[in-house]
Length: 216
Image (cartoon, rainbow, N blue to C red; front, side):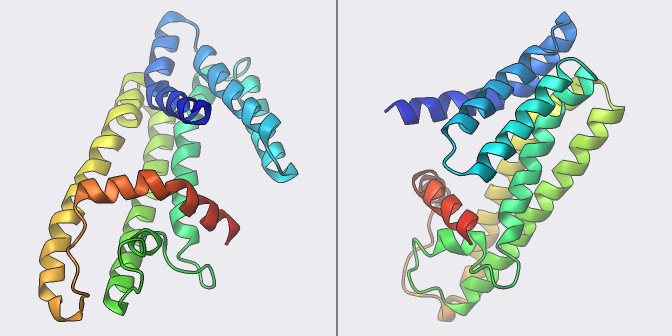
């Protein structure tokens, strides 16, 4: 139960981070939001089971704490860039040769234990799309952090990214139905998972898939 509550609280803090930075800059306490995130990474470093993960987290802690003193406004805006880079690497890593099935295919295999080649290809293209989306977000976050008002940066990183993600998910679901109808003869006799079922699968099995990708 504690692990679940901790995960929920951490997720909420990351979701609210752009707003906290925006308010921090407005109120002259821009160091506050990076300090909160630094404490999360410090806790993860203490609990880490491997030296590599521990030192990676400590590097982030050091950078954020350093940013609390120098270049406060700029360093405070780094966290969304880290998140989008991590997601890009998480999806993109599974596209490399020898790294096993694409990330989307790993989730699809929960619904289709034996993945037909046509679904495997579709999942690979979908993984490429999400990798490109996160790469675009990295560039957008950097440009906004360097050249745009903080309100624009907060709006994009705190709202627009999630709206665009939702549009991609819904658009893909609609396209999926049309595409699968055109190749119906090649599909197994099983209904296409709904958006709700897909999201539930990601929530329930996300950690298992994440650990599997990290180990690959």
